[in-house]
Image (cartoon, rainbow, N blue to C red; front, side, top):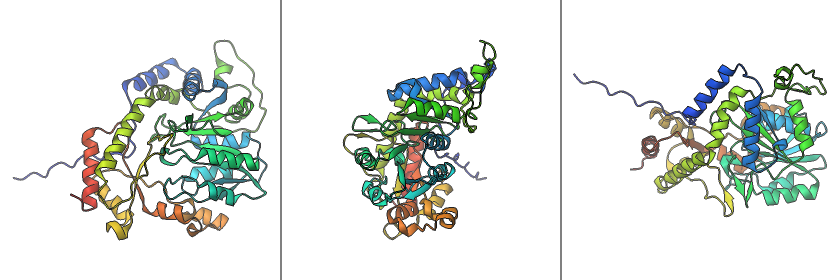
Length: 391
């Protein structure tokens, strides 16, 4: 009697690399009786500041990068309705944060090679109402920050960096997030440093960061750790109408050890990146451009671009083929103007930003996690070759 072979386990896209140190720290946090914002969040902030080479007073942990973006724009004091220029090739959170801050998003197209915000398009989009530029370091590739900062200085604009993909990225010797007035980071489950959900604000002005911390916890002058700690109860005052955006110690317990391994995790992703580049070099797809000289790519996403006329397979058919092979993939991203809400609210049409539209309709992201072992990487490579008719 023939037995049907067992299906291979599904390979989850972006699975986090969780080690025993994180598990032990979470257990210790649970046993401590302190789960909310407290000493582990404070340690995670100190460690992150040290990694970025800035003073601890310049960082603030929050519960997501979306919260970081929102609070940064509120803390910056931009007037209601002011225009913020950003990229159409990003997650909806970038644009939503602008909207929730009471500001107006303005899109500028991306460079077709780097897939990052095109500085020339940014300058062309500036109006008398423009107050800020919000570059996104897409897939971990740093934006052309020299040109963006020069444009900002010329026009007197703030710069708020979306570094959700780019914790390790560097541009000409400087770390992503340290160029602008604010840098905003993500520790979501698929990111390079994981807390499950979580984010961080890095600010140039300590006063702005201090305000961001207050805004992130209801506008209160003291958090719970300082109110209920062993030094006795401390009264608080509400000084602003804030938000519920604080990070918990339970999250920071994971992040402390994730951050301690950030370099080894980056090296593993870089090795997988190069393995993919070699394995797919002869396939009829467009691969990511090499990192630019003088930069450090964070290697957050490995995206391939599928032109149906060239490779004989539509992007969505490729995604289905990979799913049939039990391999998770992603789309990063459908261009923001493809979505009905933004079309209805702003009258946007994808054709207005042709580079982002083309990339968004052709891009597929492959697994690129430090948790991916060599055998799993080989599974991905074989599946891609089968889907595209390679050997």
